[in-house]
Length: 462
Image (tube, rainbow, N blue to C red; front, side, top):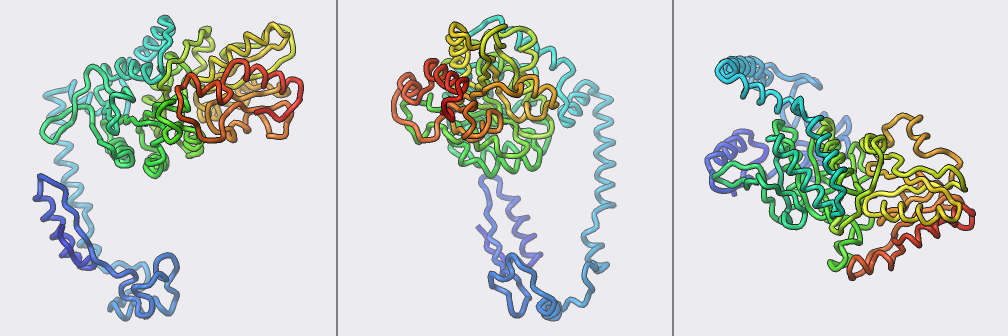
């Protein structure tokens, strides 16, 4: 761990060169600097951190540093020393000539390299995706969506060699591995990175891989640990990096691991990050669509939120299946007659909405169930489609095992008697999921009762 004068360009350069010779371990270079160096009255003080020095201090600093040049003037010797255009052009020509020779000798491999570096998916990707979606629809499996996610990874990794997986020491729980996973090591190539318990580093590394190009990184951990990753996720969104973050154990369904690990505010918090697509699918089909969307998205990251507990398959017609990719769609429509109500749900709460719809039909209340696995995708749809899915003037209820505030933009204000949210705005408890969901009101009976209230305008909802 060398210590160098951070103001000495030669010393810093020499330390970096020495660090490159160390191949068995990282090198940490400590550069000792003085904040505001050269400013006679303000060097070494916090005043130089976030405020302008001022005209007089700038003038004094120029004198102290022996800098006679006008503002924004770069002296020619310095410009020439840093101007790498000619060298860069030579290197680029040499690389282009080398690659052209390689392409003549290996046209298929060269084309594959160019495809991957450009970020394009194979021409048959859409057909591959549709086959998976259709197969999942035909199987109608009731499984945890984390398992459905692993099935999607298996299908896509077989045809996308650029997928580079990994997990933060939780592979056996988050199911980010597949039958062809090979661990990356110091001495061997592979397609799966064992990050260790390093959630922030994992997200940051995935972003770097995405920015490099040629790979589509995906990395997994528990949803509650997204707290550790937020800075890196935010930077991925800011830089529009094509990374995929797999988050499992997405609610109080985590059960016995206790309230510290039970995600309450995390889905809502991730949805607040600009340019991040957050998917919370309800079954195997929506999970396949979520993975398709994440892989096809070239201009930003995606977060995929999955359950630990099994979730029932949701039957849907071909039109509804085609609309999943739009982020929100009509899963089950109003009956032809009766008082109308609309229930929006995501993930493991979709079966509750469907159950309440069936129960209320016998009472003359016609319920439309809207599954909204990705609010960002839905919000990007045109206004006509959004109005068609969420018609005005119909009492609305949202159901999700998480913080409630974010759903008010879709159902209405808290003082609207025809709007409600069945959610959870407190931390969970230590108990099996089968006990926690009824305890916190995530039951068909409770959802049905909430619908009755908003239809009757009797309260502000849950």
